[in-house]
Image 1: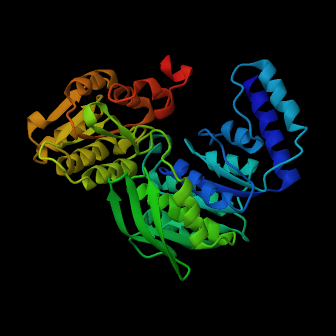
Image 2: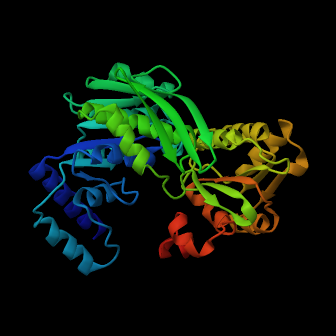
Length: 421
């Protein structure tokens, strides 16, 4: 039955694409997909009727839901029937889709392109996340490259110049290419990046592109990851004749962190939580720790605390990548709380790198971690929390937020399905 539903669903999504012929913007990468998709939708929304999914619909089922503007009916037969009936009666359709293309195994990107081939594609970054499901890292790179190769020759491929593996794809791409970089050399570049916490938290950067200059001021957004997402959006906007100043103005007005993606939350006893618990890969873990390090102590008692769960599906790279994170923690944090068996390698590496052993703690579960933090977080502490989805690090955050009654709106994975797990 599941296979039949999938075939019907994909058929209806393809029919909608064929009938209405929207411009398809596709975003892929090991990290940063969702934030980049959100930024692109914001930058384009001023000039186009844009559809982008409200949830992380980026697989064989999710992409058709996004194309049809539907939510998953779950196991409800009546809801499935209603979805299919509505798909035959679509009267009005957006002229632009901004979609996310995920990949867990070989062939996933190609299968999604069979549903909706992109006119514009964005490749954010490559990290050995999911590499356990591929023969090698090179095969994972080829998987992501598939999106660029399936992009219309009359279209555009946007590449992150800060990732050498992504930039190297340029020589294989026949479509037009634009690049973006935080502090480097590219078509769209950000410089002079500053994280400010007063009067409200925001990240500021000067953007130069296509002979123009403007200033990003992203409220409640932290660090280079948010800036990078906006740069990709600016490149896409340029392809669709939206001026830099207009794209930046829209991003400044509407760009917000997605729950669980470097989202600053008020914590108990006047602490600040950097909630990055949606998922984790080596590249995003490193980027998050750089944000933690950017916070300058305002009081002698302020601590930078790294609370990290495992990075999943790294295969043969797992031990080395966890150890590398441990060494980075030793250089940026005052206290390291490692969670789960895989993070024992990181904890050991942090001590070997010079972190005091009594400043490195280990807990088996995020629930135990949350209880410790609830009792021991101090005023002015900055607490960075991150881990792969399966690490469930949002459980630790839940014990620290100053407003737990609004956890459903603030945190990831608060739906009934996840709360039962």
